[in-house]
Length: 204
Length: 180
Image (cartoon, each protein chain N blue to C red):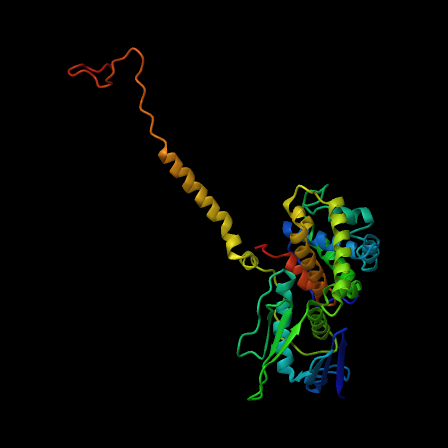
């Protein structure tokens, strides 16, 4: 009755163990209850945990990959969540796993782009495997808003064009104010003063 | 190649940037695989897209809706056509995944890695010069030594994350970015 699903890539191997949920009529080949999982990395400690931990891993890694494919590296998984992933300052990606056991320090793994792609592929293989008959609460990939894409550009670069425009306008206005206002030229054959003579009746 | 059976068909048209990026990703596949153009036609037939792209000329015409092309075609592609092109792209990326992985892995010796990148970037630049309009700033950025290197890495990374069973939805969503 025990089922094992295994997905391999060059740098990692994901193994998920479970049982079919016979209460909903699942057959012997299906996996409806996850009893445990392990993720083996080449040259790194093996990760294992319960279904909640696997779901937490998928809930941060897959959206991270979604943003990364658009060229927007964004951190996912804040403090209370067991898994966190984000871009590493020295390049690559940093995967942080917080243990539910007290007094156990979090485990930090540095992944390069190839290892991240491997991890994304095994997680994709698992979630789309027909034998896994278990609803996974994972966000569907959606297009990013223009604002989210703009945020990947540095602030100085984003402000350069509007600030340049404002400065050019201010400079042009300042220079315009420096030019003296031309005096109205006297019409030829008319007296110097344009004031009508006192008592004269204006013609219609 | 196994496909994501849960991926719904899209009803949204790709924006201009999406069309540009889709064609550049297909061009990157050609830069990775010398026989990439033929592989695209073969993959289209294998995946059952002959009704959409009956021959290589039709496939070529769809790719020419990229505004960065030297000879660009007006008009937008139908969602079914772009979905088919993305599926072909994902299948080709899956086939080329070992090559993509080899470019992205830091486990490789630096000399080997730099040679691989130089080869890929050289082929990509050659294809860009041959097919794209050099007066476009987007094309100039791709041919720029510094900016082009970053763009090439983003293209390879996008292909690696778009390969495999779940890659189609992720890649399609990214090509639809900033549409609304």
